[in-house]
Structures are given as structure tokens and as C-alpha cells.
Amino acid sequence: MHIAWLGKKSPFCGNVTYSREITNLLLDRNHDVSFFHFEEAFDPENFFPSLRSSSRMAGFSRLSSPKPLINSNSPETNGWLSSEVSLPCLFKSTIYTIPTLRSSKVLSESLRKLKPDLVHASLTLSPLDFVLPEICEDLDLPLIATFHPPFDRKPRNITSGTQQLMYQLYAPFLANYDCTIVFSEIQRELLIKLGVPAQKLAVIPNGVDALKYSPGYSNFKEEIGAKRIFVYQGRVAIEKNVESLLKAWKKSEMSASSRLVIVGDGPLAPSLKSSYNEDHGVIWLGFVGDEDRRIEILRGSDVFILPSLVEGLSLSLLEGMACGVACLATDAGADGEVLSDGAGVVLKTEGVAGQLRTLLPMLEEQPEFTKILGQKARQRVIERYTLSNNITQLERLYQEMVQQRREVVVRGWV
Image (tube, rainbow, N blue to C red):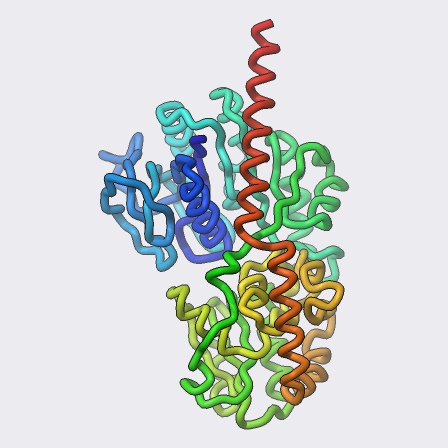
């Protein structure tokens, strides 16, 4: 099957990782993938239509007859795709994208030329998301979306309230897609309440490569001189609530042999670094683009903490679980569902610092308990959140959507 994939190549975020992992496995299973992404830097003389055959994209997939990718600056992109299409944009960030007026024409003409079997949009939160159904309907192409925005079950704070508005904005337009993939039943129920037909929603959780992300040897403890390591991995932004974790750490009077490691960067990092540093047992590693290095850090850690105010289904959390790390996360989004029934410790989104101030010293002093939690976390991933199972479900959905479209066409002829 030939899939036209619309997703992100940069800047690095969960959408980039999602696109990389899914397209890799689709090609491993002998599907063709054309990768569409937004690009700010482009040459108007050579841009339209911007099809590059078998482009090399770091971390993305492998096909024959490679051609070097122009402007491949993403730390997460390196493999082979059947073709790549750049869509012009004025601005893109980890959260949203502003396309140019020409982007819809580039997309439409490129799809017409490539003739894929279906389009799968890993939604980038751009105005183009709202016209995709019309474009694909004109070309008689099935259209599937993956809806990523983080959420909370209830609008318990300003951040979660803002995300609730995002869901209210998108729901009427998602009803125009042939199918929208969400990561949990909670997310599905929320969209149904907002008017998206139940039959147009499919729950396919995020998945992780449990062979690659697995328990194993690491000398990370020796490297930083620690006996116990607590780790946060993700963006350092308001919605991630990292400051609450740092406050709790500072007030918990942890042992001098314990370290809190922050893996990631973001707008709040500069100000937080000045208040929480090595004097407090906090180590800032910044953005770590090398996947093997991230796995080494996780394998060397004892406890993974995700204090977010809003979430979807965190890939970082699943990676930590797959590596056998004891995990704590708030019940924002689907993360509480992932850790339910003993697979980890679920925190409330209110009063995170207070909860952590109680839990951190206890977890520091109970290595056997954290080891058991890590084993349970790993088992939960094997049972429900492997990437291979994710792809199998996705292939079934693709076949179903293509078949439905064919039946519609046949009825139209009759």
C-alpha cells in the first residue's frame, strides 16, 4: 500500500518521534511512504511541485536509490523514504504551524501526481488541517488523522482549560475525516461528547519498540557519580510542570548520592537552571538527540517522573516503562490510564509538588520497591503498548478505510 504521510520532521517533539517510528515500521512491512512536511526555507524557483525520490531522512525509513536530503537539520531524522514533499510555511514550532497560502495547492498537486492509496495526517495544528478533508475528497482519497494535542480529563487549571478549547475547535472538523486515531478511550469519549461520530474514531495507543527500549547495562550512575537517579525526559515548558518537580526535589532534602537528571530543553530551562543546579543535586543534560544515549540514561535511572498538567499519551513515559524504570506520572491525558492497577504511581495534577515531596524520599530509600515497579511497568508495555502491535492495528485500519472508499465509488457508479 502507498501511504501519503503528513507529519513533522522538525522541530523535535512527540509528533516528530511518532512520524519517525510509524513510517519506519510501515516501510519495514513493505508499504510505500511519501512523507509530507512543512519547511520554512525553500526556493520558489524549484519548489513546486517539490517531490524528491528516495530521500535520506535521519531516523526515517530505508528505500533503494537514495538521494541526499536538502536542509536535513533535524536531530531525529536519518533513513529512506520513497519520496518527500516540502510544504511552504511561514512559521513552525513544536506546538503549531502557520502555512503559506500556497501550501494547500502544493499538497493537492503533489497528491494528484503521487496517487497514494490513502492519506494519513499526523496533525500539526495548522490551518491546513481544516481543509484536508476537502482536498482528499476532491481526489477521492481516504483520509485518516492522528490527533495529538494533550488534554486533561477536566479543565482543572488554565493550561488544561486552554487544551479543552483546542478540542472544541477541532471536533467539528474531525467529523469530516474518514477516521481519527486517538490514544485512549478517555480521549475518544471526550471527542464523542464534542460531536465527533463514534464510528469515525479509532483508539490505537502510542507504542514503543520494546526490543530497543529494554532493561540493560548502563554506566550512567558511575558517569555522574550517583547511587540513585531520578529522571525527567521531555520539554521544559509550562504544561510539563517541571518546576513543581524541582521544588519538591529541593525541599525533600534528598541524599547527596542521589541526582535528579533533566533531559530536554524548552522556554523555561534558562530561568530554572539558575535556581536549581548541581548544588541541589540537579543535573541538566539539555536536549539529547542520540537515541542510544537516551536509552543509556533510562537504563541507568531508578525512577522516571512526569509531572505534566496536560498530556496525550507520553512516548517518553512509555520509553521509561519499557526500560524497566519505576514510573510516576500525573493522571493528565492517558498517562494515568497507562500506569493504572499497579504499573506505576499515579499523581493528581493538583498539588504535584506536595505529593512528590512525600514520595521522593520514600522511593530513594526503597530500591527493591522501585525495582518491582520497574518490572511491572515493563510488563504493562509488553501487554498493551508495543510498536509492532500498534502498526498491526494501523494496517487493519488502512485496509478498512481503503475498502470503504472503494465501496463508495462503486455505489456512485451504480
